[in-house]
Length: 73
Length: 430
Image (cartoon, rainbow over all chains, first blue to last red; front, side):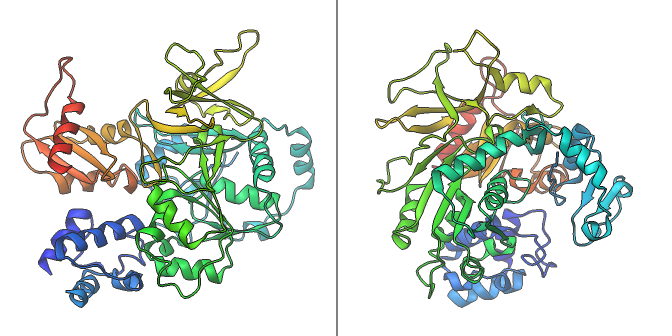
């Protein structure tokens, strides 16, 4: 989880990933961020989420992103 | 004249725009009232305005009777190298010309459903709005959220029966990069796909053409200053990965030139020159900015007998063997990043206004699509810089990478050596 938070903070240092729970629905993350995050997940964790999993629910919080990563690890 | 302003932009930038504009009225189209600012008092909520306002027919008649087609219709603000955004001011006649030339080239059917991707403060949306009005079509404003999820986007396109898209290249790439069509049970019925804003990668084009062999794909080229687009190229053949998709040939009633640095015509293929545009599509100029207007809207070097103005795009290009314009690069420090037109100077201006760093410059890594900031400071300040920039610049202008230097290298002229910084960056991250 720490590794994931670090990855996210590297991309968006202005966001409090430990607290936010409406990252996509609240418009904090945009399409470019999602592309970057998925790209970094690929590089750092060697996972490739399928297109069905690229949905707002899986990116709204660090917790849900962590679960997504776990699913593919 | 109307001017769309994205209210989610940092307050500081909104104020810069308002200061340049000195608007007659401010309409507020936000759903929820945001906390009060100095401007709140003069904001008129859009909600209910059509129902509640009585039509003043007399005044309306008078406005219409006195209206001429070179009156301004809209202004869209674009990044300015000195840190102040420039308002490109477009008149009615240019937009009438735009929809007429689109109609002539593409003959949109009545009832065409345009799937709007571009925000209204971005001139790509002008094509959705006015082409739809012209062909009795309809504009479906696709929620931003759909572009964070390819599966959602595909569903939206199908459900709303969108058949024509005029999108930024970066939006079309989202679907291709995630291979969104492979797992889709049904494909959206896209008849026309127009794209612009940056160079369309052949890989992305091939992906779309594989799933849509009968769709009309059109590469549109042109800066905001000539009313959206001046040339087009219908992609009706395959391109090799090392080939470029041309910017094509001018729309009807538009003339384009390639001009070398001696202000001479280039006519032969494969010789690089600046792309210049002449015709009714030219903007009236930059709102309240004589200096910048004079720089970009220059006199036509081929016409001396009467005043004639061309727009110097700052884009370098050449003719291919078929006489198509092909874009090659920029003359200056303007970049295209995720579909946004950005002056690196505007980012640097914002960075250098921060007292936590000594000095900073930015470069653009085209291959990695990253804005790289090199800054001089005694210690790592990335987070502080981003926090401070977020109050000054829209998010798409924030650098993606920060490299700290104890001292930034200088060139022979005593300026920060961008070429060397870019080279070093490329070497480490190539």
